[in-house]
Every structure is written in structure tokens, then in C-alpha cells.
Image: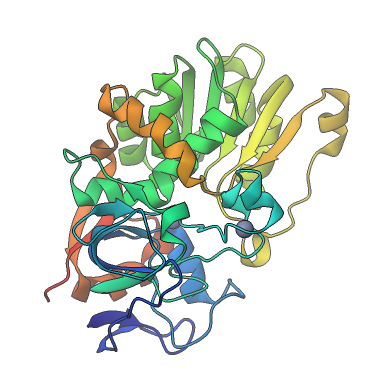
Length: 349
Ligand SMILES: [Zn+2]
Ligand SMILES: [Zn+2]
């Protein structure tokens, strides 16, 4: 099969012909990849920020596809099924998996990180009975790819961790794929959303997706004060959907008393350990929460909202590209280009 391979970090990946994956017996299926989204964590992987990666490597974890082969121990799936998978696949045996928290499994498998991923014609998925999610027939693959990472991550951050409810003020720092998803989901729940970014085109889309107010941080003397003013005293819930020292701090400082900060954007490389305003956290009883993907058994709640027309993840798909264009697009990810998510949908070239 053809795949995007990088042999070393921070050097251009290339399209190579590599062996097809085969279905081992223990719960593995092989999927023909129909769509694979480009995500900032793929860029982190290519930069060498992720210690899980063994070179040479095939990136890609936001995938949707069709099952082509099934291992002997798989009972729930057959070839031909249209599926996606949370980017964290649980092992099914550890304490977290047994308590329903496969998103923080102790022995997690992540396509595109702990194994080869979906910038390829085929990929293998582990513990299929536990981790795979069937796609609604009406959903196209490019839309479904985002359910593997950015859209599901945003759903868990807003619904399960942030516990956003109608009438609350929600602030979202960063209007990339996960930020825009969070804006759509929070506004569908009836929250008033303030979107913060440095790019007017992304902020325009944020408004179209439901943001009540938008702030361009480059044109704002004090973004925290602006958020606190708009929300009449601070956000009930604020998300750092970018993942930087500055946006993490600003998100926490944007909260009202007893507000919740949810860290969604990955803090990698030199951004790992930001100084935090812990005096405010204690004095105002703020909550600091992490959010890491979403377990397969929670997808039903999200897909119900899609089915009823309350969420429309198709609106988050930006540019569609061929596999041959993926190396350049991956390397350019840090320059914040493109509105909406770039998705590989053509694996023939
Ligand atoms: Zn992702
Ligand atoms: Zn586990």
C-alpha cells in the first residue's frame, strides 16, 4: 500500500510503498482508509514531541474507513462496515477500561502514534469490539474522520468535563478544528460562546457556527479583560483549544468564581509546564480539568445530536486533499493556515 512515511523528525515525509497490514487474531480489523484528517497532534508527532513514536513512522489518527479484514477473535464487526475509532483505543483489561474510561487507558493504542496510522491506504485497529464506532449511513467519510479526534474531543471537553449548560458563558481559545467543534457543541447546548483567535477568517466561521462574540487577540489590548467584560464577570467554562502557555493562562484568568477551565489543546514540547495562577484557583475555587479524546461508548450521545440536526460536523470540513499533498500540508500545520479541517480523501495519487 501507499503511505506517508517519515524516517526522521522534522525532515520532509515521503510517499512510500510499504507492506499492507494484516489482521492478527486478537481483536484486530484492517480498515481501508477513506478519509484521514490532519491534526495538530500529527504535527507534534512529526516534530518529535511524542515519545511514543518509533521511526520510521506513518502518522494519522483522525480516520474513517471500511473494514476489509477481521481477526478471528472479533465478534461485532464484519467486512464492509463503515467505521471510525477514537484516537485512544482502550486495552479492555486495565482499571480505567473496566470503569468505562478507555480514553485514559493505561495500555492505550493510538493509531498514528503508538502504531502506524491513517495517512495510508490501509490501517489496523486494535480491540475492535471495544473501540470501533459504526458510522451513520448518511454521514460522509470526510466528516466522519473528525469524529475520531477533534469533534469527539470537543464533545467530551464541553459535555462531560465542562458540563456546559444552557445560559452559561463559555470561552474558547483557539478556533482550529477542536475549537470550532467546541463552539458548535457549546452553542447547541444553549451556551453563549466567546471565541478567541488571531485570524479573522476563523473567527468569521466561529460566528457562523454559533459564537455569540468573537475576539481577535492581536487587536485587543487585554483579551482576558475583554472576555470578562463580555461575559459580565467571567466565563462559567473556558477551554484552551490551542495548547500554549499563554492561552492556558488566559483561559484560567477568563473564568468567573467557581468556573471550570478545560485543557483540550495538547501541551507539548516547551509548552508542557505553564506557570499557572494557582492563587486564583484557590481563592475562587476554580476547577482545572483535562480532556483526552472520548471513549467509544459515549459516541451514541454525540451521534444522536448529529442525527437530530443539533450538531452538523460536516460544516467543519475545510480543504480536501490527496495523499500526495499530505506531507507538505503536515509540515505547514504550525503556520495556522486553512479554515476548518484539512482532510485527505483521495488515496489514489
Ligand atoms: Zn487529532
Ligand atoms: Zn485499558
